[in-house]
Image 1 (cartoon, helix red, strand yellow):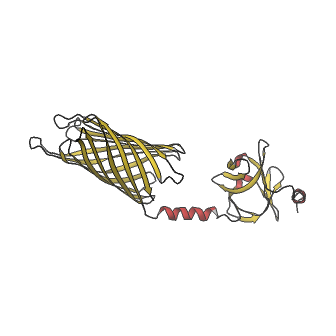
Image 2 (cartoon, rainbow, N blue to C red):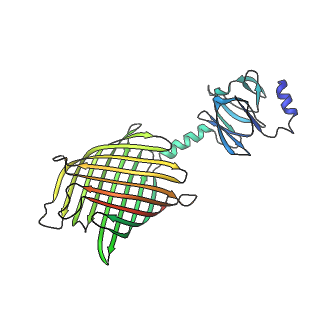
Image 3 (cartoon, rainbow, N blue to C red):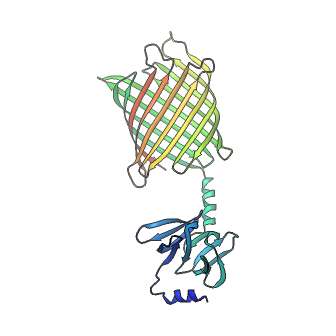
Length: 346
């Protein structure tokens, strides 16, 4: 057995934990948990679990046997001891190596990272349902200036590569006992990823708006979506495709609309803090015949979880639609702000 290892074993009553030494000379006592993606997760008494890049570590000593896999896939279960030249060794093996050669490390009782990775891949393929129901306190400006309430239900069914989304929303507002907003919206969307960042989508939205005297406003679109940025803290996706607009009005003096169009969209989400996120969905639908005839809609909101499991969320946002060719007597911009209490049924 190596002399240094014998010395460390003789100090057993003193060394009651694993020890990591960084290249700046810091010595940290605790428990080595794992090495995944080039980072050592080390549990300490003073700050819980910390992550240390492996290229900043000069040595590691383990109090008890620990499993590790090298970059050539050789796997061992042994106590880790220091070796000469900023290398580490195994108590019952003459092998020594640099810390950078460790591909995976995991404490006894923990799952092999390769097994966990395969489990995650399998879970990513499982189609799952998720539901949410929200209760709105709403306000608006433009066609109306009032306060009201609304209901919204959302359902998704999918996995990492395919997803179906459905929503149903109803808003009603009154002013001086007169109904000024009475609209119902229904929508569905399907996404299917066929490349690393590229997917195709199909979506449709249906709306009945009694205030604007629209019996039915419907749009349908088919196109491609590109997941432009997929960072851990924020995501950006852009979409483009062909669309079709249909509008049927209550007034016989107004011609119904039935035209081909284009569909452009930008989806953005960002985790600002653990307790706050930003979500935005911008859609632009111009007519193919006349680009000055278009619909522009956006929903942007701050989402705040109000319980530890994040089953309850508070969503505060603005939903707006700009119609460049509104019905006579109506404003082009219909803007609504809302405060929505959302319960998730995952």
